[in-house]
Image (cartoon, rainbow, N blue to C red; front, side, top):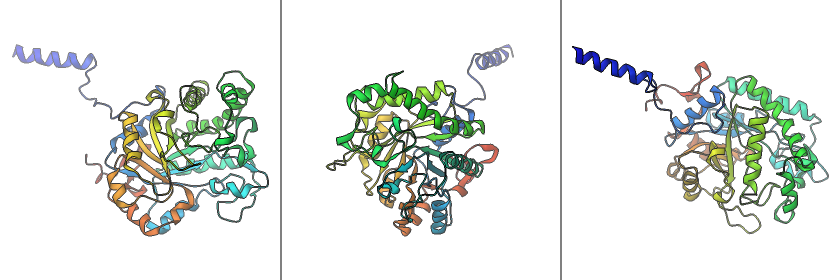
Length: 382
């Protein structure tokens, strides 16, 4: 009898010194921001819980019409995607605005409609983005936001050529050094630009809405002004500076940081370099993502990202045409895919196949009771 009592006391002692009798081991990696909100932490844990088993469906919608492409998905499949994406974007200026309509500048009509100005203000457009994100979150959607941003000296209004610089017109080494050096005029302009978006992200934080935040996407390409800056003093420095400013200065703790590359490719004048040359390290990245266009779903695009992240989550931050069923099944670790706007119209049969695939999760398969993401009971068996 005494021996049994002794065993009980030892078990109780283990519980008190930290080996909890009721707690289970956390799933996956913790968020890189130790002060992350409970909602963002739960979202990350949910994504880890489906890692390698399921892929969430997702769709990008442009600021000027934030319902259009979700509606098209529903018309094709009878279902809605889980991940809802949009863009803080920019106000297009100049005589060549039609060249940049494809990315959805917020002051223009939706791409491939007649290219005309919508005569709405920056504040109106961005506030409508936040209001729509709130509605989508209430439906159980997962919110992902990005930003096609002008070069900092131009704030939020610029000719598209200011964003799409291409290799021959990227910032010089001197300009880049000024950008990432605290207190320079260019760095102050960058901070002012960041402040303009931070106030909207704070609204989502105040409403306890987590965000899959993917700034400066496709940095390993040669097109945007932030592209093609490899090495320790290149893009890595800009990423860490951005993380520090939004996390430590603005106290934005509802963000999960999605480092979003382009799938590497060797197309003359349109290259995208190796992932590793632009990676800021696992201390600053919650999720690693790749953008895949031209239906170029090489196995290395999936596997190399998994290796670089050392077990962290990976996703398809943007895609053009969906993968074939064979490609999809060979790459099961993508946490979500997000079709870029109008590309959902490219192949309706394939859209139906992927949305109805057993690997895919659509909104009707999400249980969002108590504002926590879970799979509906019949799927959540593992």
